[in-house]
Image 1 (tube, rainbow, N blue to C red):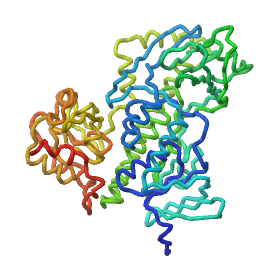
Image 2 (cartoon, rainbow, N blue to C red):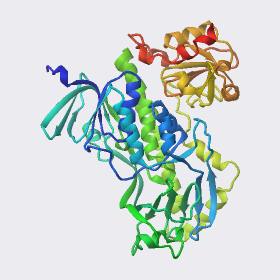
Image 3 (cartoon, helix red, strand yellow):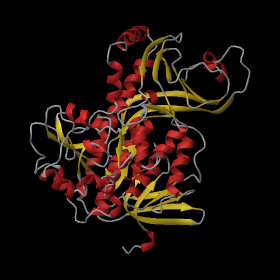
Image 4 (cartoon, rainbow, N blue to C red):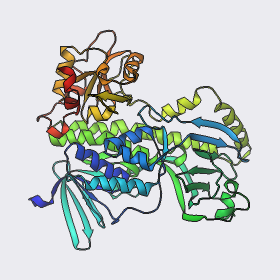
Length: 526
């Protein structure tokens, strides 16, 4: 079929929510053009997601809005579990400076986040947003461009894309197009979600409260200076909104109080059985649905975007082999499934059951959550290492492979900045000492250079991290995952590593894809 050149685009993204727009921005940073198709003309005005973690803040930094997100978010102290009388059973504190260089937990208003993302999108000529359109078809084709049809006020249109990203939510047309179905992880509950605006004296702490009451489970959090959210499981004869939120307000309070939104959601736990067909991919709620108990719904979608976009850019712009794209589902699906199952487990432990066993379970829960070190373990479990695979070489005892590099503040050429701003958006080799010829050759083949951590002027975080991981050097992927490790016993990166043929390219990196370390560190090598 002959295709009109005007209708050809490298990537079509279906859906302009946070996952879709972040995907477009990450692709743009690799020099890949995209068209984003969205049914709404503007930002959806009502709040939905309200929390993320430090890894997600780092992904937003990679998309170009790290500081902007800092300005519109509020660091939260963590999670408290309350009994039916609102007495604290357990407390999970979160640090103001996590592994990724940001607060471990942040609260935000989703419409504000989407506004910031779209403002950044408008600054990139590689990105085009078409709002007010209805996508009517996605035609997977493993042998050529993918046909995407849509309708707007002027009629029916088509685009032909080298790849399609389905960021179109739980009722995804893209998922149906690739023949994907849901794997049900057996959690489904109806909840009322209440967002309110008030300057009144709301009783709260600087984190999230989870009421572990089998009769009336609920969740409460302060989003910003005047915005609050409550969530309650729906039950027979449920009280009015004011009765539900009464425990958090003074008894006699009758001042300003505006209900921004009151709606009902069905919280489900599901993972799509396939995330890809040819060059059509699922991301975010199109690929997985997570109950909200650990605040990871949007987070998982942004992790999808960070994992896929650099691989897609390497295939489209540098001619890397097609099978590189197969690692997206094999890496992300197990991790997303783990997060969904963890959310289900936490949900049942905190709110599930109304029988006699429920009381015993919550008593045990209260005792277990007081065990030393459990708080740190639960937080770390959300970012567990990627399993071994073509792009994660494991097998070395206590290897750092599959984990993510920390992001301290560094000082280069007298300028203080975050580590990722120095490393750019390509591969990086970090070394504990001056790199030898083999490390320099490897770095050069990937379009970067080997960087001794001593040149980065941090507070010792990177050297301590390498030392604790018994590593002389690590090879970082563009998403900051450790792909391979040089152990401290003197061995080198293996010349026959599985990742080597996957990263072979037929074209040199474009200027926009070369790491910023070339310029920022040039003076240190003179």
